[in-house]
Length: 181
Image 1: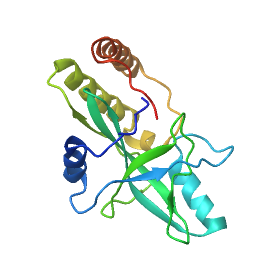
Image 2: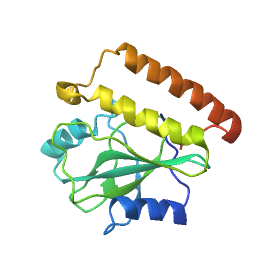
Image 3: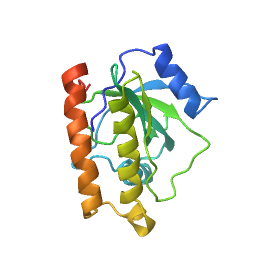
């Protein structure tokens, strides 16, 4: 799913961030993707870039929203340049900046970490969508699968994906699409 970067720091966004990392505040980071690098591979791209260009890895969460539907935090890392600027160098489709929440309490240890989702509207379809997303994550990350980047879908995964696709369409009909920025 493609998240939209929140345009401003609304109370709902700030409360969500405080529930994840109470001692940090989110901030906007420009996206300046490295050419030829794969999407969604920040934990490979950033350390390699630091090795050749210096700077530091900053671990945290990319905060995205689907207005009126949900807020989602994606475990992510960015590059801090030697002069202190923050840059997201991981390719993203159609996004020029992200909202980033640093998390000094967590480390990336090679295993996938599930997104954190919060419904914004009391709609049982949104809650079900979030529940299914967590279930799919669990299936895709059982045992050694947690370290794999390419996973072969099982029938259970396919069933979850079908239900999620149906729910997504019904949510789009009611709330509109997520505008990626």
